[in-house]
Length: 478
Ligand SMILES: *Cc1c(COP(=O)(O)O)cnc(C)c1O
Image 1 (cartoon, rainbow, N blue to C red):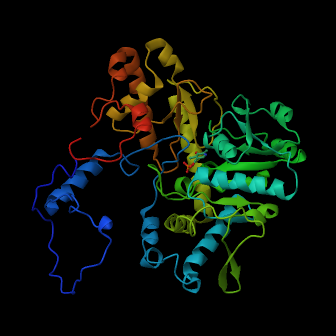
Image 2 (image 1 turned 180 degrees about the vertical axis):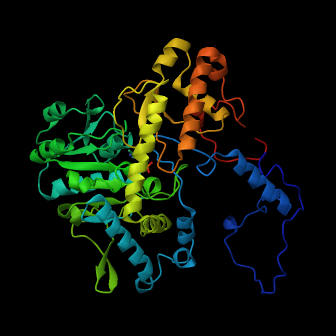
Image 3 (image 1 turned 90 degrees about the vertical axis):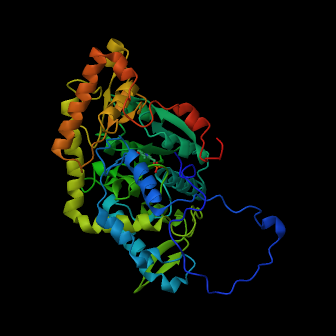
């Protein structure tokens, strides 16, 4: 039931003191004046509290349990960083304040940029983009600006491996590049295949390393050498930096442009569309194309600059500032050793869980994985008719969140699992146990699994209609 349906005319939750400020009629144009009062719900305070508490309890969240959604890094975010971002000094600043009164905010952004440059091995960075895909778009604009600037107008192609996140080819195409999909070999970039495609028309190779199968591109230095030899740039999708944090840096692997997802790796919870932050780092030779404004230190002060050949503004003001504050607080509280242990534990947890799960769900690209791995329910499907989708739905009945399904596309009946570093061994054991139970049920009682979930507030949703004809508004009488 919506809060509107619970409304009863005349009920109030609190009383305001009598208004002792003189009011006057405003002379507004009549077509702007509403004819009816707004239909706001009328409830007692206790009913408002119960309504929202009831909704929150129907929800699943990282703060409720494990959320091993591969490629999404749904990890626990320390509450102290939320606290820091809520300090009035951060929440009460306004982007239209005079610049000289924004020094503290500028300092946080400048210091964060410096730290992220150090973490990624890049020379400069913009904090503006509001999401990972937005960072990719910005990065691709920088790639295009670079080749236009050096007068190399033949370079119209971006090469993307078939294991890439779907946003990669989409971002390259949005900037006007032709996308070539690179077939992978044993889950990795096939260097011989890449060589065939590298020529004077290639602007960039876009890679995720580790890739979406959770595998580290072992030939990365060779890939770097041949890409640069052909005159193209190397783009790094760093959305899932968890895997290598404190161990390897994209800059040292030879990448020219990198985007990060602060809302995956750096302590902002995400999902449902934001707020996010996708900073883009570049090597020195690309710094002059960064979006403006960039924040520079000038003696004791901080100034906003427009890089010489900037691609322009990609977002209003300075990006999602509270997300930046959380990332800054996270990096400072973790410290160098702490960040290193994030990478170590993310990889250890993934390998531990992979070992357990591969006993009953094969992992096609097996071997040492990084922060995630992809299991396949193909065998279960062939033998029982139960799909990866059904297994995922059945997990809901056991009160845990399913893995990512049907991605990457190169694994059939894919279940992509990313436990993250913040889960304990007991939680991982329990997850493996539940998944094993569900697979056993597929053999013993396939109908039970195919009709799952049985215990959730909503059973199987029509996700196609939900995405094609979304209903975001409740209207009286519907
Ligand atoms: C999440 C993700 C993205 C996109 O990030 P958004 O913030 O959702 O736009 C891009 N690449 C990879 C590998 C990702 O995991």
